Length: 423
Image (tube, rainbow, N blue to C red; front, top):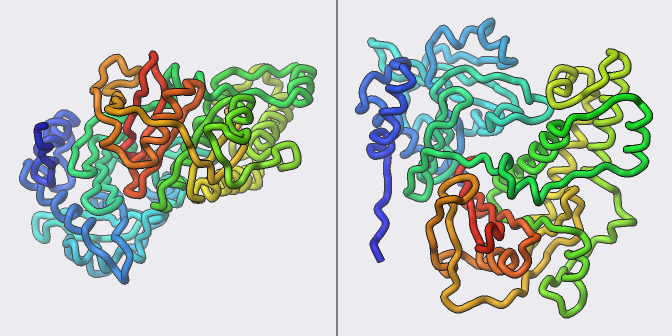
């Protein structure tokens, strides 16, 4: 077996430089590949440090000094706290400042001048909704400046963006330029088939308002991402398994391949996500009638988002966090396609096969794959592989403690996984 080589800041800069040149962005003092490598090297070294016993996790943004004027930032909903004496752009300074610049709310703004070079000039509060640069509720239409943004996510883990566009990721000694939007794939949509309660459907049909499919698809994807993101941010790891409720109930029976330490009495429990979706549809129906609109979809939800009470957002966050809490229990969290919790602390007891092979997807629909031994993965991954092998109706998501996310499905008759290095 050929030994894998590992990538570090200079190789990351070499990989990123053609993209940076192609973007035509000779800004922020980065006009050579060496200057780009020096910036990445500082971020990389900072990622290896601890402050008061905590791993350094932060966001660094290279921007122009004019970008930090309060008026310019107000357009994005950001606020700024400028330093009267800018600090050196060095890993130890990043370490010392990181407690005040938490990854979830704040960006360290780095500016460049010919006289002083790179300096940490300000802390910019972006709010929690913008931290992952993904659409979400209610911040789904929030834009982000075209800064060179470096996410310091863990030891040796850097994610590089230009504004909202992810350019490259360095993680576990590997560089990944592509990112899979697995939620748009045909195989993902087969596992996420949303449906509303019959009473809600009857109410909506009588209203004269029709709902386009892109609305429910967006809500499901947004919520699914949020649950995974919360699990990832906690750095405890976890496994989600989604499958038909009837099959899950069958496999949970005594002697079945799924053994639940905590099985949920679904009919006696609150409906959770599905109830929230129904309230969204009902609110949109009221607004559509008021605005004399007959067709509602994703665009209308964007446009009318300010007319939703904050309780919609808080319920959304609480429900996602609640599921993430269940996933923290040893074992997997078993869900149906409506994200209803069926059981947690679930042990997967599917027999392994000697010399078992799984396939790593190199594109969204896995038209190109690389065979790998299942034994190269940890226990969480291997049990998920086995479940999807024997029961193709299931989709598994394994979140590692280091933050890597792996989607696993039985695709075209073979167990296939997609690595998502950034979320």
